[in-house]
Amino acid sequence: MALRSVKTPTLITPVAVVSSSVINKPQSIRFSLKPTAALAVHNRQPSFYGIGSNLNPKPTKFRCSASALSPQLKDTLEKLVNSEKVVLFMKGTRDFPMCGFSNTVVQILKNLNVPFEDVNILENEMLRQGLKEYSNWPTFPQLYIGGEFFGGCDITLEAFKSGELQEEVEKAMCS
Image 1: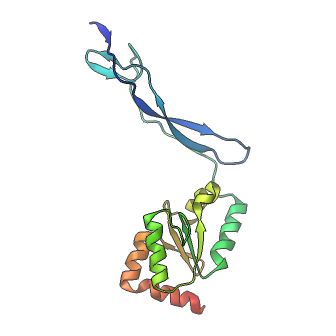
Image 2 (image 1 turned 45 degrees about the horizontal axis):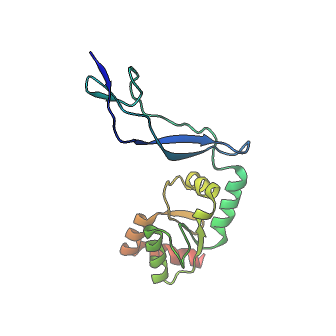
Image 3 (image 1 turned 30 degrees about the vertical axis):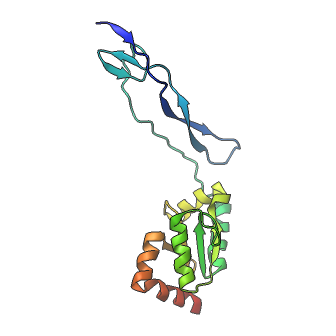
């Protein structure tokens, strides 16, 4: 059984890089694209592990034991969430949303003439990751009404259509 090398274009595969620049801060994981070596063919079966390798491909799993939600960040988030009756954590600002979902929630709140505080989560990665833990909600935007997490774009849109959002906002404004 002959092993032959096949000349192929350079493949680009994701490579994970884990870094921790400061002690007691959570690790950050970023992915970068790096060119891989030549593709080896053995019995016409491609192998990305090199010539003659008998390694089986397994998905890489990452475990970050460090929590992004420090006690100080939790206190800051609680103060921020309770600083106004309606707070929207979003990508961008109310005047310049950087995401269609954030823009949708902004337009809904403007349509209801609701005064709200907007917080751009793109300016602070620590805030962004900590907020995901704080709310137990993985995506943005995140709407808080009366100090309580209300929901993301889909929940806000459905509540707006049903009239529930207006009721919740009115209840929060009167308290």
